[in-house]
Structures are given as structure tokens and as C-alpha cells.
Image (tube, rainbow over all chains, first blue to last red; front, side, top):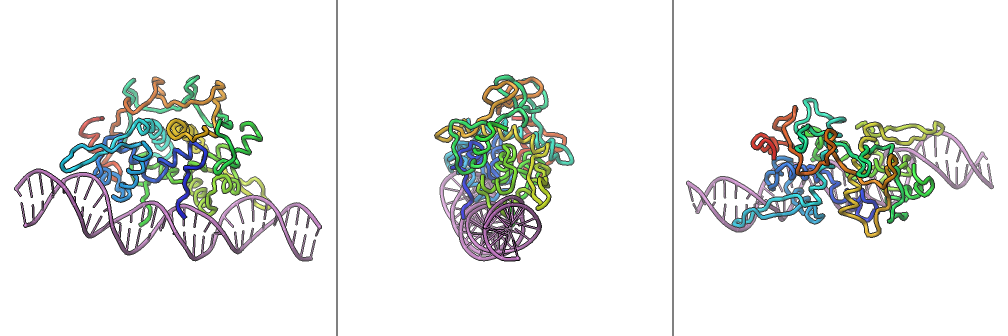
Length: 168
Length: 168
DNA sequence: TAGTATGAGTTCAATGATTGAACCAGAGGC
DNA sequence: GCCTCTGGTTCAATCATTGAACTCATACTA
């Protein structure tokens, strides 16, 4: 009774979650982005169990999201950095942070804010369409069967719905 | 030895993850958005255990992300819908799906694509700054201590780093 | 009237995952 | 030699997930 793997669900969201969908990985990535790169620092900052951190870092490295780099050879010491794939997750984590600011704000306000250095403003992220620059929301998206569409675990009911209605 | 809760970490990302950071919730939200709204449909589509789905739906409802609505009274039958907070997660999930398309694409291509109905193009999401409309990436963000900044679990090391360097 | 179907859950034993504490190992400093 | 620093590993206890079986209320059917 292993935890259900999402790796074989033909959905890119499921595959993303397979890589970073566990309880700790997003916070590990946040810390790596913010400059907390060493094993002991991550343990201290997150309060994560050491063996679990080991497993997560190995998994993130295998997923191509994190890179293990020696910063000292005698004795061998390593630190962790985001790969290109990992760096591309940063805006998404920032967007999720903004959602938390809006809907789950701590009493005393956000402990960390971001400044968009290109314009100097405090960051308010927006998710937009690359083609028209219009904002994306739940009511201007139409799901469609893609090139890999077929009925399989994780999309059985969805596939029927998409086939039946040609979009919501 | 309960699973570590993120609720008391003064970080909005942690608070977001407290609500939707578990293994199944993002997929449940995806299905609700795509029109899979009933208990049995969710079980069939996701292959999730029924008792776990019950717990997740209760937790999502308590977090204000999902709403339970009767669609029939005799016998009582319910379906689930996204609240406003839940709907605002949709673009983030879509962005995460796009990341999966780019870095973890299944062999046969994405089974689901989205069309931005405002412009008719196949969706390529971008995360931008609301002020200058410039794209956000790892190298044009500067983290800063926010109004709620203080040393506490989950940000101890980060707080030191931010205080010391005034940003990366 | 009895039997079956439907939908939304609940209960439960088995097994995997997480936790926290203790331990290990290489190197440098005193 | 002994202590410290850093980056782990090992282990027992406990928690979470899984999958199957079961409940409950009502409707449908013969």
C-alpha cells in the first residue's frame, strides 16, 4: 500500500505534483531560492527531520529541480541550488504565496515581501496569457483534449466530460 | 508524532500549503474546476480512497476553498464547487500544469490543453508584475522583510539572511 | 412486496511515510 | 587526545494512506 504515484497519470499537473507535490518540497524550494542552501540551515529553518530532508533532496535532484554542488572538498561539504527547471518554479511559488497573503494572511502581515526589481514596485503577481496579455481566470479558460488525450487513470471522467461537451 | 503543521509558520507560502499542500488536494481542485463535482466521480477519476477523499473535502471546505452544495434533497445528495478563494487558485494550477508540460511532459503530449477564450489562443501562461507588466523570474525578485517579519519557525535562517544582506 | 441499484459516505486492518532522537564519519582546532 | 562542525544515516514510535467491505437512505423494477 504504497502512496499512490501520480507518475503514470497522463496529466501535466499530476506529473508536476509527482515532483514537488509532497508536504515539504515547496518550502525547500522557497528556502533554496532565498539563499538557504546547506543541509544544516534547511534543517534549522524548516524544522524538518534530517532523514526526510535527505530523501527530499535526493528526489528533487533526481527530478532535475535541484543540483548538489560541493563548496568545500576537505572534508567534502555540499550545498544545494535550483536548476533551470527549479528556477522556473519560483514565480509559481510566489503566486501561491500571494494567494496565501490574500486568503490566509497571518495576523501580523506577511513576513516576507518581494520587490520586482525591474520596476521597483512591491510585487503583485498576475497570471496572464502570453498572446494577448489578458489576465487568466477560471472563467476565460476552456479545457480541450490535447494531443495525448486518452481515457486513463486520472482523467477518465474528465475525458468523458470533454468529449461530451467540447468544453465547459 | 503528528505530521508537522505549517499553520503556525509565519509565511504565506506555508499557509497556502497548509490548505492545499497535500498529495491529493491540487488534483481534487483540478477536477472540480473541470466539472467533476460529485463524490463518486472524483473517486472514479482520481482513484483516491473514499475515506481520504472525505477527509480532504472536509478540510478544503473548512479552508474556504470548496463549498458543499445539495443538488437533490430526497435522498440527500451533494456536490462540491470551488469558492472564490478556490477559483483564484485555478490560474496557479494552470501555471503549474504548464511547468509540467515543459519539464515533465508525457511521451504522447498533454492530454488536456487550455484555450484562453478572450483571445482564442492556446494558453501559454506568464506570471507578470501587476505594475509594470514585466515577466517575473527568479532574477528580478528581491525578498524583503515584510510587516509581519520576526524570527520564528520556518524563517529563522531566512530572517537572518534578509537582515544581513538586505536582499539577495 | 421483495429485490436491486444508486450515491455518498464510514469503518477497519495492513502497510507506508513522517517524526525526533541518537548515532556516525571526516576534517580542523585546541 | 578531545571537542566541534557539517552532513548525513539508523531506528523505534506514531501517523497517514490504501483498498476493501460495509452502512444508510431512497428510488427503481419485477
